[in-house]
Image (cartoon, rainbow, N blue to C red; front, side):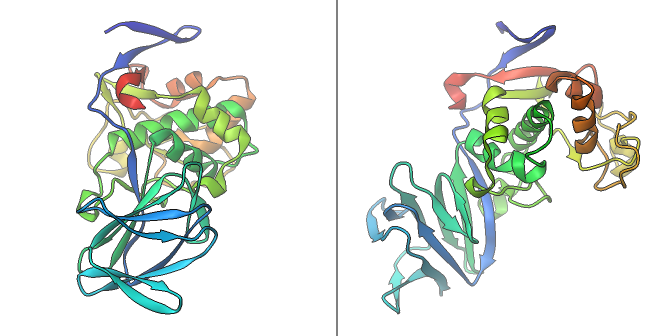
Length: 292
């Protein structure tokens, strides 16, 4: 492996992983109906045949519902059957998709598995993180706290690819995995934090770790064995620098309030992460050949 300098005394190696072009995020699971629109014209494509089925008008909402084992769309007040149980909605280049009253980047899959419609946002991981960082951490907080959050969230996402595979996606859009607000949540500050840490992850023993974090540990973080059944070598218990803030979450790994307080004290993102996780963790950058 070739070595690549990241910042000051912190080094990372280039991590070669299986091609990872995008991540699939479940926004709705097995619902009876959903409402979707696009900011530009949007194409509906049959996943099985790759053929264009319908062109959605821009800035117009469409109702989709599960109909037996296929999907139906409401057009001009009437439902029309789409003879497929799996479709993709793609806006024109530069367009966004609206679901659950939020705008999202990337494109969407709709799947009828016989139990209802599952709505999946399929997009590059860096664009996903642009919607995670401001959903997980206030955009007014310190920039290095945002950068630490971006690295932790990227690590968690990549370590958990396929976690929700039985539903057809990788992660949920809720704090059960990671809060994700799509393009509607993005800010300039948090997008900069994502771009400035592009591709950087936390590793232990050559593997990306699911870098757990929570809002506040209430004064001291917990070892994983205190919360779950297994001790993780990279998850240690340390003072969390969030005294006076009620514990919120499992308390394992990085305290988000603690990260912000450390940033205020002059810690950079890499020092913050080294503080909350084992000193034996390392920073790695995903090989760009596979990452983009």
